[in-house]
Length: 397
Ligand code: ADP
Ligand code: MG
Image 1 (cartoon, rainbow, N blue to C red):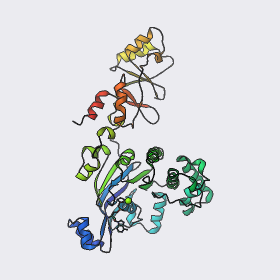
Image 2: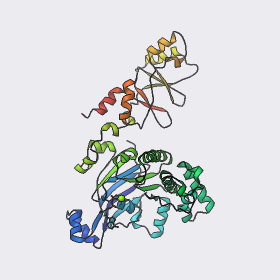
Image 3: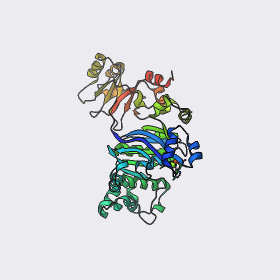
Image 4: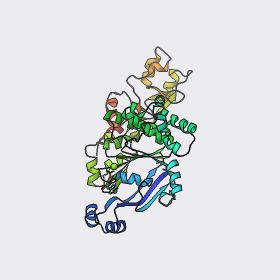
């Protein structure tokens, strides 16, 4: 386990809508539920005793049915809604104690919001829209446009900088919304159902893009969704809300293995382990790999492999990118006619991206002549996937 750096911490956070917040909270402490409290006081419990931590660099998804308090929670985090009780720390600074001036600064540097209805201004060009947060913050125009263009390029809209929002599709407009948040350079991005209004195909495309953007940018993203597929696709961890409570927080795998309430279980109904686990979860780090060198012939290599405890040699470039797999037998066979290592590679070997869900690797593994190499985003081989581990992971017992 690597040590996680806590970016945002929420402690015993409450939001009551109505005129009797103190009384309402005392009723919560007495154990009354949301409906009973509303009947008694006319007040609505928006968020009820939420406590959780968000780690630097993760995509933290908050999921729950409509009305469960997701939007209220996310708006409390930057005090668009004032908490009734509780604490919120960003990098150890307590947001709830900040003066207006400090809060403005925090919203600029630390925490920005991407809205669902992209909130683009129709009479401004794409780049002016993307730069909007910055010009409000008193950046000079050139500086703001430079940052905005950089952000637009990151979301693939560099060439549309001078278009107007009405000339863009819904997906592109949402990208401008994301670019605007990226341009501010803020460390935490709050996204409330940011993709819910998009067509399904564009929506998955945006989800994948957000994950990629995140890998490059290392922002921390708090993403609200009521959609489990979306949550699993993008979330490093998921928090599940019910009636203003956070009822469970964990990785999709942890939640699926051990749902804490029936509500959580119902959310994950129909999801199988093979959708949740990825190649990286069952990676085997022990394998024999050698960089291919011009001078190193088949005989040397087959002797090296023969002397090792391994059956397969994973041949790579000098910068660890996978080229091919050989066995002692395949090398001996090839050595009869050649000294080229590449003539001994097994056929039918494909690499598996570390983030591929297991349900997508089953087919590949069935055909594979050997454990398949698992690669990272730089295409470096980081481990192998064996059939035994795959079968074990898929067997619920
Ligand atoms: P979600 O985003 O999960 O759909 P919300 O955070 O919007 O849920 O709402 C949580 C609860 O708080 C709901 O019962 C909702 O009716 C109530 N609520 C939200 N905003 C207000 C408000 N401004 N005034 C009164 N009640 C509100
Ligand atoms: Mg909402």
